[in-house]
Length: 149
View 1 (spheres, rainbow, N blue to C red):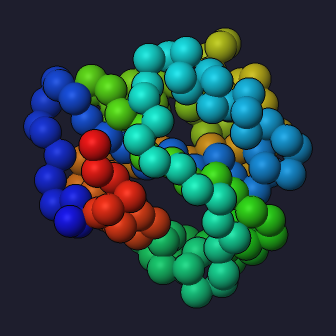
View 2 (cartoon, rainbow, N blue to C red; view 1 turned 135 degrees about the vertical axis):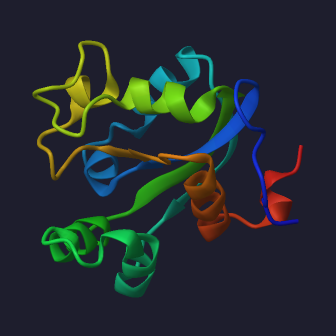
View 3 (cartoon, rainbow, N blue to C red; view 1 turned 180 degrees about the horizontal axis):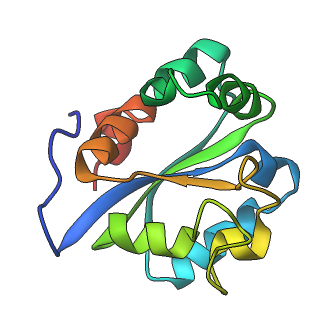
């Protein structure tokens, strides 16, 4: 079973979270997962992956024409990361708020990036930005059997 839709509007929703290579390398995955769970999210599925260059290029295809694309691919392949499907009401919007601004210097106090990120480039976490991207991103890393329940 592949995810083909998410509930529209308010209600139970799933989104993809990536605890990026900088998070993994700095041994912050436990702290970040704890923050996610304390914010009311349920962990549906999780695994450690080491992205290859073709995987990272495919996952970030939407950014291929941007000047930061090569550096992004290099960063995402430099170490392992933890990919997870998390769930709660209004998950996409709420997780994006919990992550904070891409620039940790501009992120609100208490957000993941304000507390843990080193820079705009090394910003520790990724989250889906829309229901359509959540579906695509979840299906990129997880099979339907990994998402049952």
